[in-house]
Image 1 (tube, rainbow, N blue to C red):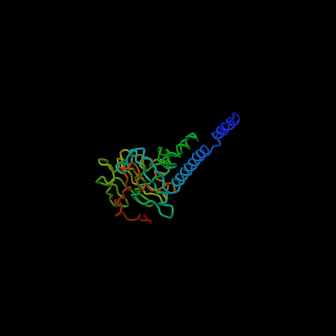
Image 2: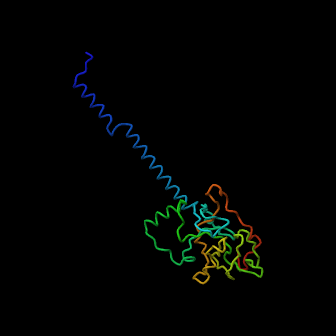
Image 3: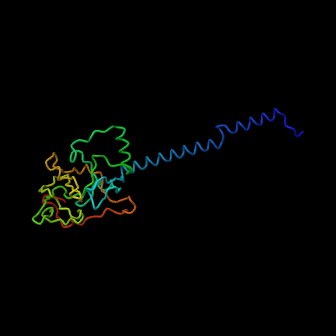
Length: 251
């Protein structure tokens, strides 16, 4: 009575084999888990890209032009809401802007696929920024008269000498003399490491005269987010506190 027939053994073995096929609960659960993880990961990437596009964008510092304030390899966080609701860049702000039409007359051509991947990497702070993006300090706003240098070798704005303590130690305010009035709706920008910075001074003789349109500003650099040892706010400068508004209007 306790004996099992060969036919019964075969049926039992078949049932066990069926249980191990790809429809088993464990296999299905693992597949759903991986799928769920992929969906969540994709949504996280989309969220970060949207955040980067509209609110806060990481930006990798690729050169020495803003030393000592910003160093090569720093990842700054660019506040894209800083000027979105009626505010405008102020003297002393460190800004990121699109230099097309001011620092570059035309955007360089690039492969669409590699360009898209690079833009995505740059948006996450994982790759160098686009060749059209620059980070500089605002030295003059619309209506300002910016002169360098006075008899003591200092930069002046609207006739007031500016003590630029953020400039790299040992650098002159500028070895290129200039005396310009900033058109309304534009900015005069310079790097803190003057001897290593290609900025408004280098485009004086070109269309636009080195002025950056305010509507080309991407945002204000507010924080250094990486490396952790340099995690801090980008320091504000009081260098322009004594500078009066330009004679013809606001500033």
